[in-house]
Length: 164
Image 1 (spheres, helix red, strand yellow):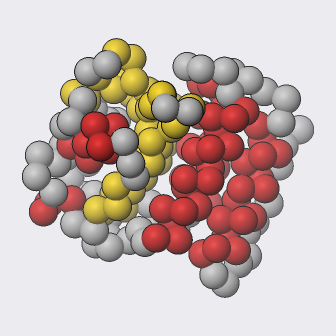
Image 2 (cartoon, rainbow, N blue to C red):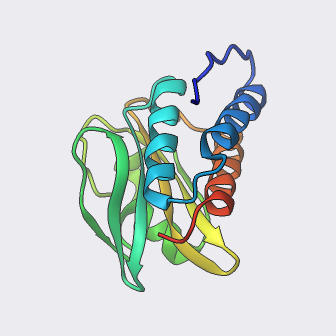
């Protein structure tokens, strides 16, 4: 059985290396995409400081994301392609790091306490399967180290899971 170990790293790259090792161990031998997403968002929510929402949205058609497993307050269930940070990340086919969500055109406020956001697409070759979404109540909570770390975790998820 998997046991999360306390991560005691002084730098973000070290934190994400340790987190990546835990994600790999957590996903070992499991292919179910929902189970894997549920465990990853629980681990992220527990391990990352100053995060008030961590979860997945899955692309269910060419035009809509649907809420997947998450930790935090109840969230928007459906997000149109190109709308908000999540829909924009899918439309642009790239990670989006938003220092102040209130300055982001078309931001969708599921939790009014959220101030910054990081959204990373789940890419399988050229196909986008969905996104990992992290929110924080602090401005500029996420940086390029967080983006690189969550991109690594997204790749681990895609490699370990059957398509949702």
